[in-house]
Image 1 (tube, rainbow, N blue to C red):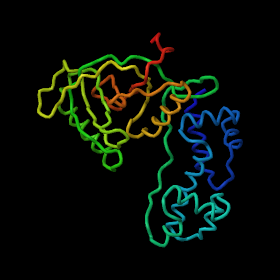
Image 2 (spheres, rainbow, N blue to C red):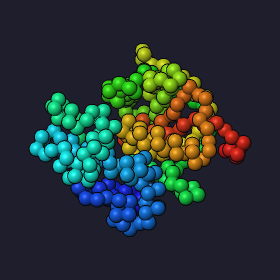
Image 3 (spheres, one colour):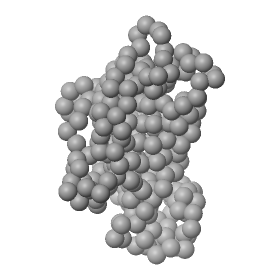
Image 4 (tube, rainbow, N blue to C red):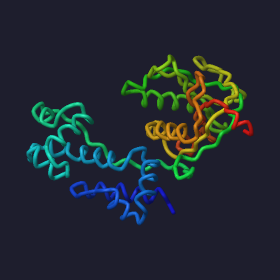
Length: 289
């Protein structure tokens, strides 16, 4: 069974039927799957419960009707199966921080978001719980040289800043050079949204330029995950996957300044599959690793 095709089809079915009653039973039926397994699969792959996902897509669809000013808010509520207008208003304010009527009166614009893509990664079933596949392993110590900078995840430009530095690194390396690439994220302060980031390559490749730093990454016991896609676009899914992993595996995060390490096999291909290493505490049960 191709789980990703099942979920992609379910997302498309939901998107095309937001004006219809949608339930766990009805959506699972379109996938020819039991509602119990479908619900676990949907939550694991999308990082959201089915009901919350449907609600968010209905609210997203309501934006065009509110901003076009052609239907009353009551009509929009019933058109998108919210029921009473009060239910629609409460849900809308929770998601967007403003009521539908205020949005209309102030003539504000909130862009609609496209239907999300399905993040592809291996999954596994652990005692009935579906989680992103993981391996418990040591990340071996390594010396890395590259570009170091800081980003604030609370600011809108952090993605463009990270991409700009990755481009700078690639421009510094001869195309004939091959090998892995490491992106190391470290917390600046506890509970802060500011992170230090280092885009680097193994030290022995050598980059003789100003503003490049060399760091020694210690050996770390980690949970290792594999993803296909762009880390900057799957951040929310990664956080959900990691939280589910900690809950189901009963592992604990390591008190390390390194939050996670992203590794690519090919320094010239940041669009390839990559691995994420998240430091965790080594428990007695993990002594075999």
